[in-house]
Length: 106
Image (spheres, rainbow, N blue to C red):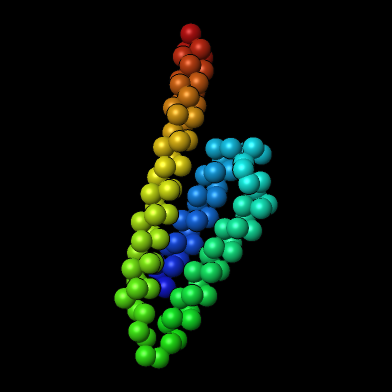
């Protein structure tokens, strides 16, 4: 489960980076506030995991696994959504670079 939490933490940070890449200074909430929100979210996942992991008997293990797997799916979907939103920018960049290359060939 620790690897899954590392995956969730990484996905949250990737989403933060992609959001900053897409919106820049126009992010809502602003970058500093969003950074605090995302770090708090990561910390809460780890605190809850450690609490449930050290509980004896571990009566909430199945529910914890369900929540972690659901979170992985959610954050992976959100990351893919951000990539698709940024994708037109990448297409425009490649068109621009191709046009520059064509100008140099002429």
